Image (cartoon, rainbow, N blue to C red; front, side):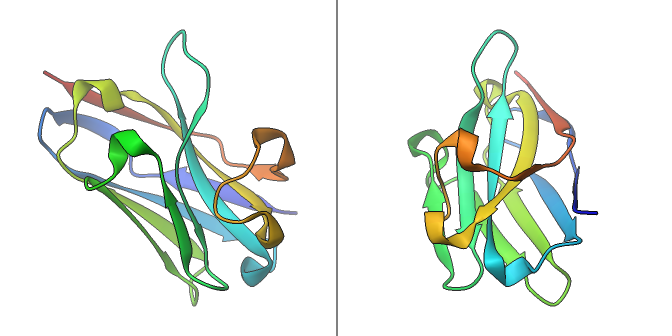
Length: 125
């Protein structure tokens, strides 16, 4: 059984930092790219950042460039999202998802095979 376990969310102040983790099991890690999505209340789910561990290609959405850093620990099958300089508009439920690596670190949402359960990030002003 494939599982993606997202963790690390919480409450932070404007300008603070959090690190999210996505632990993958039941799949061949190198065959997949992992992407972080987020969904704020009343808004559509949007891609935030992605990484393909096989070639270390990465994706960052414009709103998070320069503030968020994605990385992977291939030995542990974990993808991290380091979020610095957090803003209230970063408040959302963050999900990690896995897509076949051929699609790259960020793909059309319907192409993702597996999703984690989500972790809530709240940034107060």
